[in-house]
Structure formats: C-alpha cells, structure tokens
Length: 368
Image (cartoon, rainbow, N blue to C red; front, side):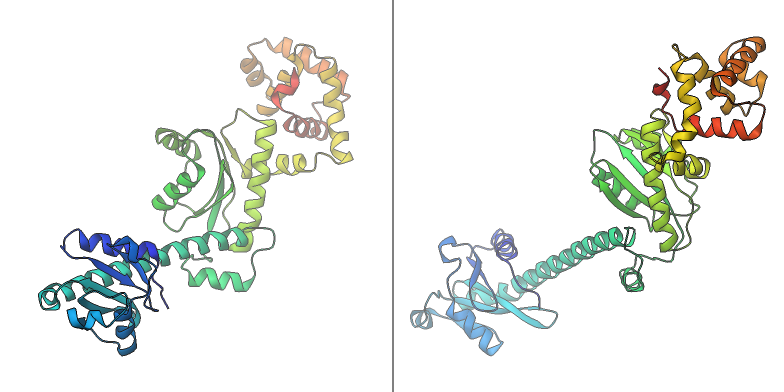
C-alpha cells in the first residue's frame, strides 16, 4: 500500500494553504500528523483522524467536540484515498459549516497530488530497475532467461537488434546527461555508464548513425567527445553482451595505440583489438620483435613512419611515396632498410602481414 511521507504531506499542506485561509493537516494511516501549517503539531497524534480511520467516513468536529478530544481543533477531517485504499486523513481547521464548501475540492486536490507522487515514484523505480537490469544483462554473468523475461515486462524490448557504441567524453556535461540525451532522441536505446566519463549506448540497429557526425553533434551540445568505439549489430541480448565486451576492448586499444583517432570501428579493427588484448602473451612479443629492432635503429622515426604509410596504402609504392612526399627511389631505399633491420621481406604476404599487425599494436608516439 502507498504510504504518505512527511515531504508529500507538507507539500499538500503548503499548496492548499496557498489558496485557503485555513490551517491544513495531513495525517498518516495511524493518525500521526505528518504535515501541518502549525509546525508544532507535526508528529503528534490526532484523535479526529483516528475517528476517520476507524469509521472510513468524513468526521466534522465543532467547538464542543474538540474540547473532548486530544490534539484536535474544530474542523473537517476527510479520508484520503489512493487506488481505493485509505492511506491517511486530510484535516482542515475552522468552523465545519463554513468549510463544507471547500472540503471536497481540497480533498480532490490532495488525492491528485498523491497520485502524481505515486506515478513519479513508480517512474523512478522503473528507471532505476531498468538501469540495474541492463547493467546485469550486459555484464559478465547476464543473459539468463529470467532477466530477459523481466526486461520484456519492463518494456525494454530485449529481442530488438542493437549495435553497441562506447563513447568516451572529457570535461563538460556529465555522462549521465549524455545517456539521457541519447535515450530521448533514439527510441528503444539502452544506455549505461561503465565509468564517470564513458557511456555504453546500445542503439537499435540500422538507424543511419554516422559516428563522426554524431561526435560533431555532441560537441555542438557541449560534450567533449574524445572518441567513439562502434561495434557490430547483434540480433539478441547474448550477441549484444559479447559486442559490448568487444567495444570496451576496442576503446582501450584506441586509447593506447591510436589516441588521435576519434572513431574506431570493430569491423575494421577486430584483429588488431584481439591481438592487443593478448599483448602480454609471448607470441605477441615475438610478433613485435622485428619492429622493436627497427625502432632501436630509427632515431628520427623515419622508417616507422614509412612502414606505417606502406601498410596504410596496401603496399602501393606510388600512393605511399606521395603520402610521404618523397620519390619512389627514396621509398625503395627505406623499404630495403626496413627489410634489412627486421629480417622480413615486404614483398612476401606472410612477412608483410606480420609487420602490418605489429604496426597496429604500437602507439604512434612509441616511434620516437
């Protein structure tokens, strides 16, 4: 059953007394005064209210009756109802005959305030429960059928296909306000905050999201977006949970290896992210060994810049030379030096793939 609080009771008192020249009391289901225009009466027992609660009807108290009751002044006391349940009593002090004109109107206003408070509390509860449920569903141990059924009951549409995005923001409006903004503008979005500066946004698939345009839009609204890691569409909660883990790894990879890149796509960086996540393993160390040898002999970073450009341009000599602003002969000399230091032949696919993957695991500023 809904229970009155001191705050709600006093709110009812303050609102009604702003338009009525009479004192108003609000009592709970035990007859205790929770709100009153006379502050000294709060938390005292009202015997008139107890009569209302016992008989479930309006009780009028005149001067003579008031003298025989404890903590009571002349007035009218009316039952306060919510969902056909008696939850308290509304008391208006004054001459009963004078108050009859106002009493029902005041009670109707009070019950409307109770209904509004209950609906607000219900919305807050649903929001908090939904946030908690989403955090579990997308966490390490989520995905049980019971949780999915509860999500369905809360209207979260767990069977709707969604794409995960992890947004990293800097100073400015909070991650919580960003989550609210996204939820309000993209229907059926799921938003949780893994940290104070990140928002995990699971957006319904195929809404035409351009991450770079989204970054600009968010910046125009005051958010300083460092980067966005975008995942791939998932058909159900289980796939989405895996996708959320992948974009978290992708964001960590981007922060460490590609700090200047604002958008990272899992579709393009899946293998790089996988290798970086396992970077402490011996096999990855072996993969990086040739590049570390180049770095040790590359004081100005020229060779590493060249190798990066070679990889970015798919081994196309002219495109690579143009990007570096050098002649193809200079490029050929540098690639020969890279091959000499690394022991890898860049004209062989297997060797080039190893160099390419190694380059993706080294931060750009690690070249210097």
